[in-house]
Image 1 (spheres, rainbow, N blue to C red):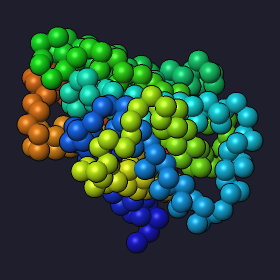
Image 2 (cartoon, rainbow, N blue to C red):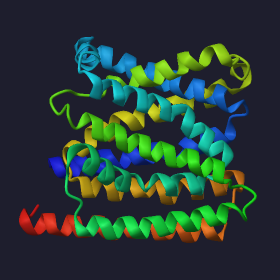
Image 3 (cartoon, rainbow, N blue to C red):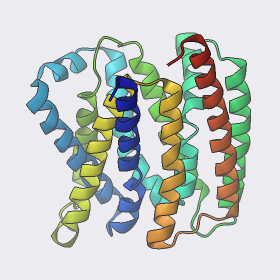
Length: 290
């Protein structure tokens, strides 16, 4: 297997491990912040143990001494753990993952504002169409029993926070930020601990809690390794799989119908990003054939 095929396989497996994330949140019967505590703590500890076994503490030292971009990354990544749970709790899974798909738009905006990067015409058209799709989703939230604009706003924050975190670490190309993930996740869980009763659901739901953390930990590792061998356009296309599969999985298991407006808006968002990424991939192959 060549490196490109390996990258496609590893990234695809990583995306498939992310797909059940929102389903776990729906299945765990607990206060949202309790679920957020265990989501951050279990996945963070699992990734921490794996990193300590592979590379010891040197990676953590590099991250903690990386300056303000590293700390911005840690804080933003840590904040997304409870925010994701709140988003899935307060709106439909379809709305959440369709809104998450807008991350490349935020990344382009932040890259322009903070790094002075040029936004290409292709991306400007993509942004406009994605905004139309998000507007359709927001409109549908007012007519759906399982969706809410409050959850939509939280999902929008998660999308923007991830994009901002990735923009910050582009100033740290020589530093691996993987060790920052358990720091952020465990740190967020520790901040929540005084305000929740985390042991309440453990007695009967520990398999779900551990499974949730394990899927996040595995997905994080795979999605960190895979993109090293394939282009960003290919990564973006594969990640769109979650936007399609996650709502279908939740619909099949717990019967959450996303509604026609969410499906329409999601189709607009995913369609715009898919066309944009396919154009970018085609241009890349014309310049440098695989």
